[in-house]
Length: 147
Image (cartoon, helix red, strand yellow):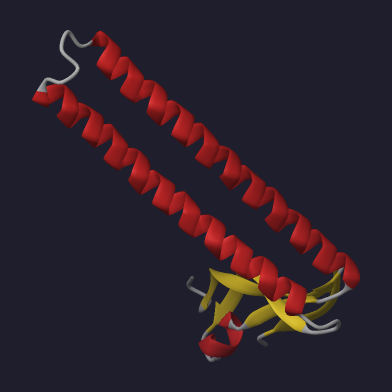
């Protein structure tokens, strides 16, 4: 650091060119994720019902208010988790719709990665932190890096 330079971490935006392959991959990933959420929903319902049945079975008096409270608590937890999973699924379906509407050769943000970057006295930090990579079907086409 005595020489006036420093290595910092920066975030690099990954942009992708929409191609038939990119759309196919994106739709497949989203379809798999939606199927996964559907599986989680099914498992949640099944496990919730099993837990409720177990609580009732182990109780001497299933109509006891404490048992009813336990059952209600389980049902509330299941409902909250169901709502969370259904919201995830709704968002994925919306993303899937958006992917289908993308035009070929359109550039979309696909994510971010991190890298290290050397900065020194006199550098424009804003420019150094602005970096992006453009990919087409996984192959880097351009690197847009600050000085």
